[in-house]
Length: 342
Image (cartoon, rainbow, N blue to C red; front, side):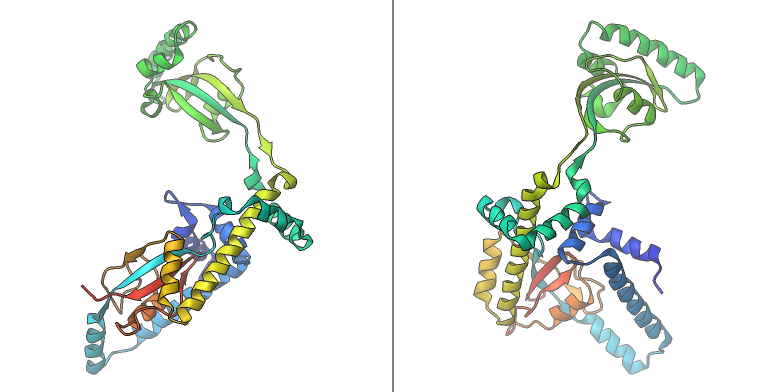
C-alpha cells in the first residue's frame, strides 16, 4: 500500500509542477482545474499506479527464471529503439494573451459560463491578492552571533556608517562598506519584498520605517544592518469583476488547447502526417531526439515517460513511423515517430 507521504513525494517530483527546481502548488492546482479532477482523485490514481508497479516487482522477484528465460531476458535487454518526439503542453498550448478581447466578452456574455468563472475565482482567489511589499537598501556589517567582541566591533562600525548616511549617498556607502555580497554591487538594493522573506528583526524594521528614513542599527543573526526604505506597495486584492476577463481568457485558452490536441489525436489515428507537420509548425513546436534506449528501460530519455511510451516506441517501424496516439505524462503529451537507432 502506498502511503500518503509517498504520494505527496511523487507529486512534488513531477517536473511539470516544478519551477526553478521547486514544487509550485499553483502549477499543481491549475493542472487539476484543467483536467477537472480534485486532489483526492489525482492522488488515488498515483496510489493505484504505484501499488500496481510494486505488485509486479514483487511477482518478478518471486520467480526463479529458467535458463531459457534468462537468455530471453538478455535478448530483450539488447533490443534498442530511438524516437523523435514533440513535447506538447496539452492544457496550455494556446496562451491566454492570444485570445481576442471580443472572444473574451462573448464568452462572459453567455450565462452558462458565469458559474464556471465564479468557481474558478474562488478556487484561485489567492492568485488575485498581493501582499504588502517594501523596497529597501541595506548595509550589513557582519559579526559572528554570540561573539561579544565581534558584535561590539560591528556595532561601533555600523554607528559610524549611520552618521555618514545622514548626509552622504546611501547606495555609495553600501557599495563601499556592506558585507552582503548579494546586494553590495547594487548599492545595497534588495528590490521589493513581502513580509516573511527577510529575518524577523529586519522585517520589523523595514515595514515600520518611514520612506527615505535611515533607521537605527538592527541586529540579526548575520550581524548589524542599517536600512533605508525607498518605496512601499500596500496589500491589494482584485475582485471577481476585476479578474473576470483574465479568468475568461484563461478558460478559453484551455478549451482551445484541448480542442487543438483532440484534432491532433484524430490526425494521428488517421496517420495524417501532413496534418501533424502543420500542427507542429503552427504551434512553433519542435522535434527532439530521444537517444537510444532499451525495451527494459524505465523511461525514454529526455521524455521521462515510462512503460506506456516505451511500448508505443517499440511498435513503430519504418513502414509505420508515426505513433497513432499521444503519450501523456501529466499536463504534457508527446507525439512520437520512428527513428533508426544510431
